[in-house]
Length: 514
Image (tube, rainbow, N blue to C red; front, side):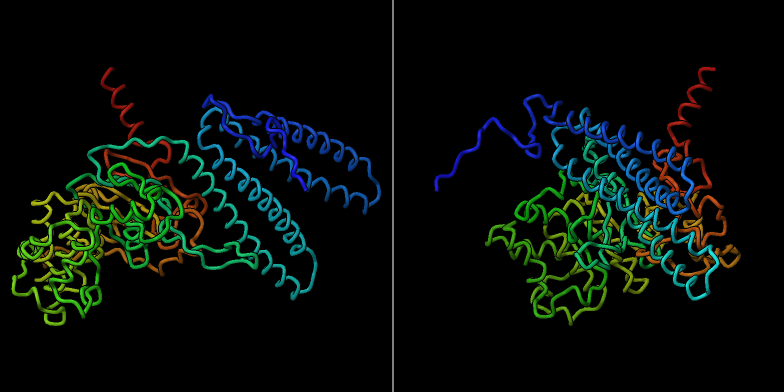
């Protein structure tokens, strides 16, 4: 059979493409007209149902009209919200319109799910309040708890999709003095899936983290175990597939790189692992461990290879005759020097140090820290230093980030964090640092309770369950991450949620003019 060719001038609505003008998109007005017509039709239907409800006399008829009115109002809200999301796309972004349209469709689905869950919650609450037996009340309460959990998950999902739309429409401006720029980084691990394969529960290991890291400086990341420090470092290195947000290394978006391009980028971003015993292969000699990646990336010619490895070993405090020895022949401090030499051998610009001294004695810790500082001065390296020990972090870091259950609750310079801590969690961590003076009596702040689960974090501020300064608003509203002084960011309701550094600067300018 001969296949008939379709007319090339005829296009389906779903195959709308960008025109030559970057600010106009085909078939968009039709979609907006559709929403306007639907909103008008639903508004008229709501008015008719209200009149019918007022004139109805039969109880069954009233119940049916009420049910229909509730559904119509729910659909009306979905259409209105979808219309408001579609409006700015016409003006702001035409190049990424396909991606945004896909996200818009997802938002519409989420809005419908949220409205349906709201209706079910209202019905279940009404059934629970009725005079029924205790057994049925328990069933309704369990249903209500499940519905509330589902509602929270859907609203969080919608928030993440909206963030993606906002991120893609905000142009990124790279600062050449920064080696690393992180914007709204999120790393979620799926825990539960539905029968159809849709994720119903996530573990939010890293949630909306942003910071800049200048060349030749050190960022210390502190927090309790399980707060997301190591996951943050691994996500930056793209050892995990990022859930959301952006990581820019020297202005390059790492998420957009192919496997081949990322492989070429790997030598510039290295990691020193926590355990020197398990991070070294027992079947390879020291020379092979340090030089394996050097050979793989062809950094030096073959005739200069051995001399290059000897030079790296000397820089890291290792004798050249260790070249043919194996890891089991060395102490913990010497093994960690081998790990440092392995990362330094590739001439990186950024090194993520994941608790590199936590498994070492105090005297050896000082040697390794001093080695890292010397190498930084010689090679102009940039570090992300993850640690539990605040005294070590103070010694090596230029800036410090405090993390709690995946969130960055405070960020500032070393002096700002230690001299003027603002967040209650930071104050509690600093109160645990021992002072080598028997005459000084520290007021220890004891945190009661355990860290909440990242899979089911509390509403509002995640720290409110353990905070001694908790207020009613902390239990309901998530605090904003605001800059209160130059370079000092805090997320806490104790401080103004509307006035940041910009407002303070304006006030100072007006006072000067007066």
